Length: 441
Image (cartoon, rainbow, N blue to C red; front, side):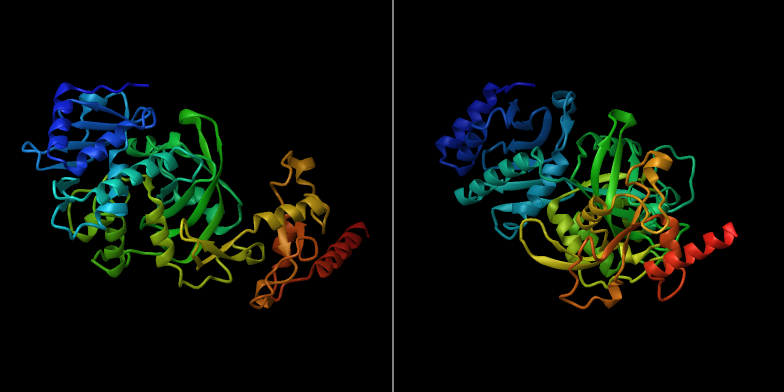
């Protein structure tokens, strides 16, 4: 790890702040006390780091009338570190700078990605700022989940290396597959994030406009496992929440400013690379933006997206989806404990696990054993809801994993739902028995 490197010019500026009794002095001295979690490298100004990651640039005004916070990146000083100043600056804008933006002593310049704080700023502000910086650093490098934006190319398979196409994920997005292994790759901008994606992280799924119907934010997923390392790594997505109607910025092929684009600008800002092409289209710019496969979002941004879509109504069926494998879900937003309903179904993983623990992973209709056939224990087995969701009234949605659920193979599950209303398990067993007798006869 690199070490603190404090220049004489910085020490002199600290002394000037102290003599003028400015609150910024106490703030900077408090930051110094958190080594090795936080550490600084200075010339006249400050480069704030954690581990070997550059977090923030803090500049003194020449006349010491205030200080400037920005995501300025000095390549000569931090060429051996990872730059996450944009991430830190974005969080600080959402967490505190917007709170005080009407104060005369603070001004936000989004174009230059900097915030100027004059010497009139109160100690209360600097205390809050210190605590938020510390909280962000501790939470980001703890076991708390990170939040990501995964972009899907709305096309058939193509030759663009590292980009994920809708056709690659079709089985997962339609509910026919319970997981999808997202491979390492994409743009050079996106690749720097892969080393930080871990089990338990949350993902917003976005699909651009193109060949397949529906584009925009199409759902949410979780990272359940990371397999491999470096460029050979794969990230297992499961716990899919597919929206009935995608959150679409504007009608396909009709780019225009809408309530949705204004909302996305407000939440993510004009510089959010994953939406560069959307904003380019709205502004009728000719230069095409470089597609971004993965970008990072903050917990607050993730929560705002959930809040925006909470009133959408779930589908009973999605093409190719067997709804009996899903339960309506309520989501608790991060930090607030507030419960919101969103238009999604999820596989109830705990109920499924208990069902398979009781019955085993063998089809209870035809006897198919995926472990014996493929060596894939529990991977090629569905869990059928004996009691359709449509018959469940509010307050009666509790599921008994033994009484209400049953392991069935994909073939039998498809057969169950080949008519409406669906066959009962007993009816399908009878059909199978008759078919076997005819075959033996």
